Image 1 (cartoon, rainbow, N blue to C red):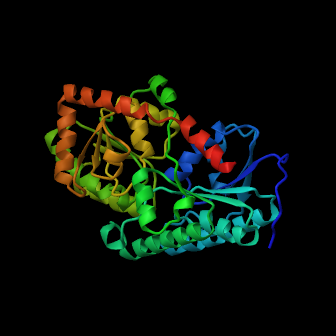
Image 2 (cartoon, helix red, strand yellow; image 1 turned 60 degrees about the vertical axis):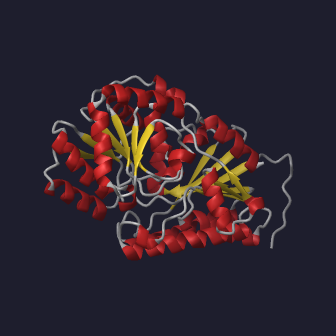
Image 3 (cartoon, helix red, strand yellow; image 1 turned 135 degrees about the vertical axis):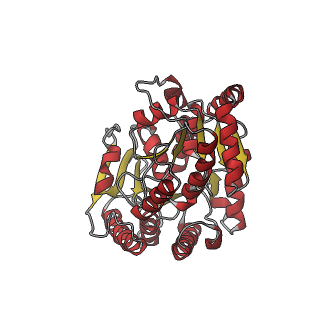
Length: 394
């Protein structure tokens, strides 16, 4: 077992496990959060990003003056929608990542995900042989019990158990466990996380960049959703609610930004066609940052149909763009966000649709909530996140 001491004069390093992406073009909130803060970290911090070869493109437009990418060799199970093949791919990726960490001079490891074993297992294994290495892990939300989540029941069980396994590993060998908000920290304490290891590190956005962004293109969408295509993101609820909106306002159009597994996307498309909504409900997939901002700046209302969420990066970006938000009654609304939204009970698609219709038809109400949304988003900034993360890195 290594007990190597770190020379204070040695440049500080950070190994980031950016290994939890399943498909090209589909990125989780945890991965996006680090993408956003990476170029804002101190330039004297040497950052190694361990990631899949297909995820390299996410880093192409980021200043890499102090960043080195170490790409994992592709495996034949990557980019598959079958849950079992995803599991095998992640196990392979976890082992590949561990081999890289073993050979490197590692000071601090940062796990981007709270459930992806490719982000968690290698850090856990490394700490067993190198206990002086720091391991910073983040928790974004606690998954609902399998019976309370939409989607495949068996897959939900596996996801739930894998997250609980990740939690056990964090509790046993993590050095800093960072919850996304105070309510989540309380939940983790109730799950027996050690209080001395647990802290809060929220998320942020580049508020000024979004506010200063000027539309360079026109889009016809009145309503926008931003998120991966998965049942827990409310994909089927949104179609049901939109059918009611379309009946009340036939000319309204909705854009869903974000990709997902082929199976979920196929079911969603079929549901849209069955309800004759194809002309008013469009799946745009992954879009560039500029296109995303253009679409948000052209829209009137943003939807957050998520069934679970730890902070809501997309929500904050939409608020900064001046969009009022319609959401379900999640913990983040009232805990993280205090204004700029209207929420309804979980799974109540009837009330969800009514809120959308109300905002689309009442421009003065929409303007009032829009102002609240901008004010709320202004309270979050990347700088606060970066400053606090640097303290944990040490």
